[in-house]
Amino acid sequence: MNWMLYVNAFWVGGLICMLSQLLFDTTTLNMGQILTGLTVLGGILGGFGLYDPLIEFAGGGAAMPIISFGNSLAKGAITEAERTGIIGILTGMFELTSTGITSAIVFGFLAAVIFKPKG
Amino acid sequence: MAKKKLNPKQEKYQQKVKKYESKPALFKNAFQAFVSGGLVCLIGQGFIDFYAAVMNLPKKEASNPAVATMILIGALLTAFGVFDKLAAYAGAGLSVPVTGFANSVVSAGLEFKEEGLVQGVGAKIFSLAGPVITFGVVTAFFVGLIHALIR
Image: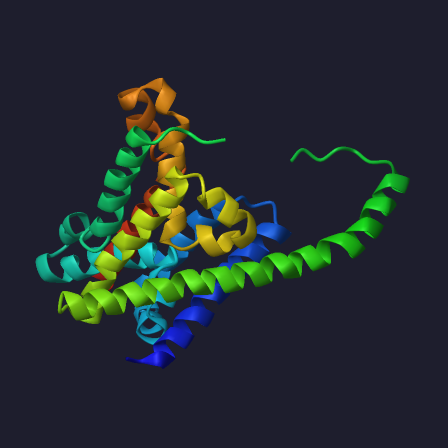
């Protein structure tokens, strides 16, 4: 087991969350806007191929935050476009993010159906 | 919050209070977000290694079931009403990782449940998470387009 990866996952993931919290506390942005911004940032970093090295370095610390979602969208589009041409942008968009979106829809729907709203 | 017009005296008082009050809160919030965000990512890494070992997957693919597990955990915490209590401490530490994505989907679903399964849950489930997907996809579209054109 690679313990250094766990150390890096902790501080990189923590740092991303801390910076988001500081942004939330010091600006008028709400959390929805911050998460949207982070996703856009992830897409741009993904376009330059800069986010994958961070995932390599920090594992879950980079793969769990929402930035990773933007990165995966961009990477899916780019990879498929390289393989099949420009139409690949459309066919590859959700190739890597399918897990997140599908599980959020299924678990979200079931939870909303089964459980009662609280508070 | 709407900003009320304050008279100069009130404004001075506000500034004075802010000096003493908001700084410690700022540090406290940042610290708590760091620790809890780090912890969530640490758990995520644990699931990545777990699935890599159990399902014999390469690390990159093991993050898929790990993300799904974290989403399930976020959804359950929200459904049981625990998420908000934890988030009161963790702040961005819980909403920036995928757990927050799950929370936004489930909380929207529960909130609009009374409007029905189709018009309520079905329609509103992405009322909070939707912007993330929309802006993410539009960004990725242009990033992909530029990439394909300059290649």
